[in-house]
Picture 1 (cartoon, rainbow, N blue to C red):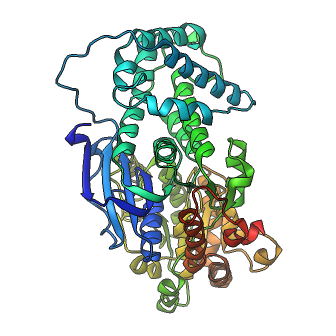
Picture 2 (picture 1 turned 90 degrees about the vertical axis):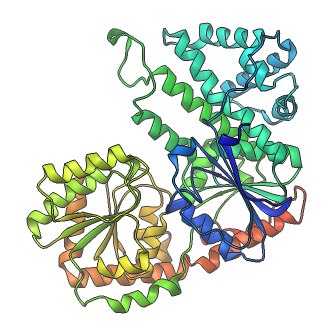
Length: 529
């Protein structure tokens, strides 16, 4: 791999837990990145390492986090920033038997997608060693062999419904080429007593490779369901070609190349699930989604996020008796957060509560074009001076100034910002995604008895969002009841002490055995007991 495609910031020969991160810590603020920073700092007795996987180096700025003292190793790799080798590529015949096993793997995956068993783990055990340099399936064989050309051509003839072979050929190469970089990364990675992938996708595949190579347990946790989020991204993408004529397209049928990418990420997810000793979700609905996507039920469990309540609780005393007329969206300014719905809801809120303001607290550098669209929408709705783009904010400084946390997202998992808001006594209005309903309304009779800590609305419904926010911003009694419910809920069910204890037990079980199953009762959340 080229020097431009990788950087080592800290180096260790061995670590207790090696974290496998895709597009998160330490280059992206908030969300999963904050959780990674939190879990590493919260378990100082464990020596961590991390491998960061990104797209291209230019897509990331400087480090967003100071590196914890117990993070002994950090290397960063950029999967789509490969510098071509100096030597001219040379054609080769390729190993027919090896490529036949590749085709068998794809047949297993197609059978699994149709509802059958995949049984891919034994095939991966055979194929992964052959992907090393000089192996029958090394990168040169994939890029330049006659057998690879035969396999790709046969796939196009048999299954591609798009007329462009050129687009098919390059799509297959682009999506698969990073896998060879991942196998190279695995060969030079530090020795780990346990491996922990924080998603499926490329990071999860790297976990599968490392688990097979190092013969150490792989833990997999998903804050959101990776394949679902990639589907959302791909449905919205404009860079994937659809070469069919207008009369060849049918309603409800997505472009072939979008479906090809979706199937590729589903395959990476299945490989991750098959290789993982334990598969963690943040809440029960996502655990069921993992099972539906192929995770063996006996290996799954839920561990909710938790926050440092003691850090935020004193903020409750800093606010005025009446809630500030400020609705604040806290999160990255990206399409999945649907900031535009929040802005449109503010038009209704300001019409009926003229002193109201809408704050958007989150970085804009991930998708500058979308951020600019949001700013133009503010201008077109005449909301200049009522909507403020604040950029990244310290939560302890922000929360006492706002009356309501708002999430208008089209996809979430278990958002830390809701829990931090509750700990500071701030209610929330959120779309009905991820665990938002569970957090706001409660899970189970005992939790629901605490009361609603805000309101839940449909996705992409600005009017409903406004109608839910207005009573909380204008009725001090209703706001106080929601504030009390949120504070009680986070103190009982979502403290970081509970989260740290469950992950400590998970890590210790993995570190202490080659492949012994973890005692689920020690780390399961209350909803599973």
